[in-house]
Length: 228
Image 1 (spheres, rainbow, N blue to C red):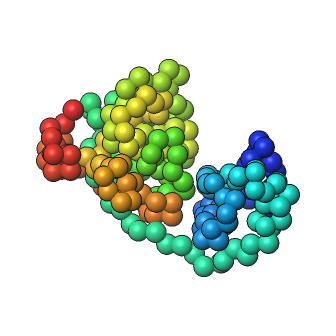
Image 2: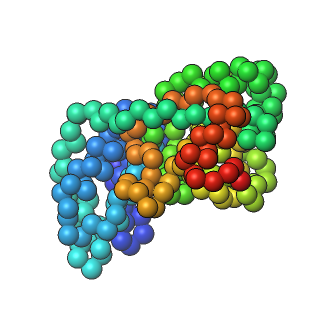
């Protein structure tokens, strides 16, 4: 574990530089321990793949004090097992305009890409970029594909994308540069619910291929309106 300053009111705790499930579990174990301790100086903890940022009130405490406190926290070895969420996805067509490119780029058929992408059970490593945007670990490198050179200005909510060796789902309509291979009818972020995000770090995700008619039916049930 390495700790270094991150500006004048935050520090970064790093457990390594690779995407690894065991390392990510340490990140979230320490995150939970810090949050549960409820330090008066704590502003926020922001976990990532292999590190976490601890933001503190510099009027109450300094870097060295926070560093010593974190070094003294014992990380539990108990594994956190989140919920399993099945995510229906319609692949290709207007819902996944980059699916054919992903297949061609990797020397695969479209059906092979869908089968490879929907086979694993993915781990939610952390949330970021947008509220409820889950960065998923465990994607097969056979379908790894670079981002778009020029991001789209509008990516529909629920779009499933690939960026390098990562896969994820856009919870809200937004600009984005990931290669879009499909779309889920599920609503991933709803501020009227508690918690507002469908996924939490440590949860597991299984993609389930569906056809367009199933997508439309599920979308109308989930959103209470027709597909945009």
